[in-house]
Amino acid sequence: MPRILAAALVLLCAPALAGARGPSTPAERKKAVELTRKLEKLPLARSSNQDRAWLLEFIVEAPDFEVKSCRGPLDPLAKDEENPVARILYVQSVFGMAAFMFENPKKVDDWAAVQTAGIESTLRAYESLLKADPDAHWKELDRLIAARGKGRLRALVEKEMAKCGTGEDEGPAPSDAI
Image 1 (tube, rainbow, N blue to C red):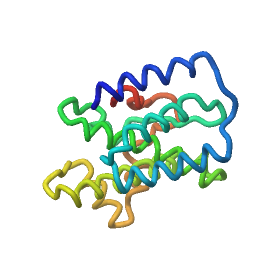
Image 2: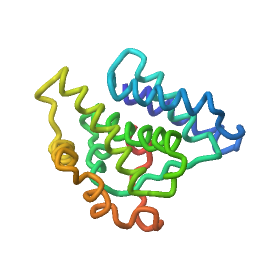
Image 3: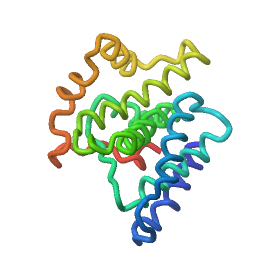
C-alpha cells in the first residue's frame, strides 16, 4: 500500500512542477472537503487510496492556496516507517488543513487555527480507527486527544509549533510520509 501511494505521489507532483493548471474551482474545493470528511470517518475504506491520491494531486497542483507543514506533534507519525497507517494519519492533517482553509477563508492566515484543524482531522480519523481496533493506540495521538478534551489543543499547537509560519520550522512534507 505505501508503495502505491508513493508512486502515485511521484506521478502527481510532476505536473505541479510544470505549473500545468489554473486556480482551484469551487467544485474541487467542495470535493476536497467532502473527501477529507469521508477519510476521517473511513480512513481505510476501499476507496481511501484513490481519495487520498486525488486530494494530494489537488493540493500539490492548485496554485491558489498553499498548505504548509510545520514541525510538531504529528512528526512521529510521518517518521514511522513500520506502520503505514501512521503515515496515512499524518497525511490526513494536510487534508484537514486544506478543508479548513476552504471552509474558513478569512482564517487562512491564522496559522495556529489551520494547524489545529489539521490535527483535529487526524484525530477524527484516528478515533475512527480505534473503533475498529481499540488496541491501535499511539501515545502522541492520545496526548492530543486529551488536550482537545480539556479545550487546550490550540494552546498546545501554539506552544509546540511556535515557529510555524516563520520559515524556520518546516515539517515533513506529505511526500515524506508516504
